[in-house]
Image (tube, rainbow, N blue to C red; front, side):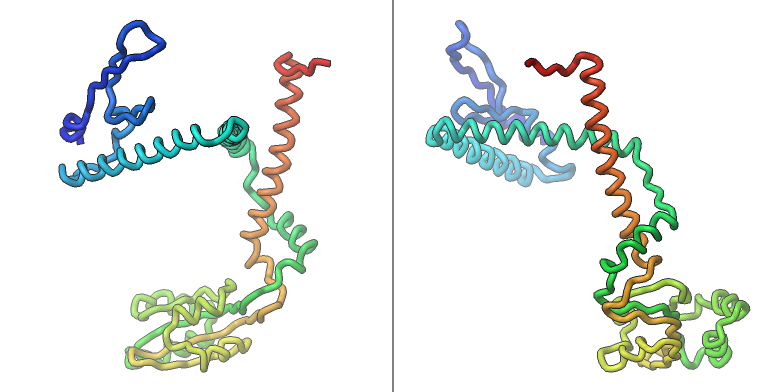
Length: 282
């Protein structure tokens, strides 16, 4: 990178109307009165790039910069003063917005409480149940995919169907023998995720997964899938709190942020008036 830059680095001497003597400017390129400097292209080329790639990258960057500068200069010549002033105001406002956003986010991050209790989430959920209708089916289920010829297959099947405390322990202890499995049947998951995850489930048999307390046994060329459906929620049913709690948490936290921002804006103005940093002249 540095070897290439030393080739394209230019020492440009220009005569400046504001000075009595010539001013030397170290630049890589110039468009009218705008200059591209060495530091502007530092870090442009990634480590390990060949000299040919470095040359191409820098040349392309310089050409893009030149094109932009020429377009800007052309716009300044052709746009009327009123339009240019309007653009300058927009630029100034955008700069202010960036500073404000960064500052407020830092203050909020330092002060915000991001812990949402179950009771608080439940209060919001109860008051807004109508907005938590499901747009797809959810199920609670467990499954194992196992070779049907595996040693002790019948006992595995028995433990899976009965699924008492000792059965859970047995299945957990031999889970390494399963081709795939999911034994956590206490959480709600989307039916579409199950269809995507288990190849043997298809459009013809997926409705079997929408039958509560249903045991399903499906085979493929690699073995047998044992599936137990514990619970089902259909499309347009109200989503359970445990399923939508992450969404509610984010809603509650966002509300806290808005309230905190309002308080910060009030406080900063009050403090400025108190400290005579802000005055309104009548």
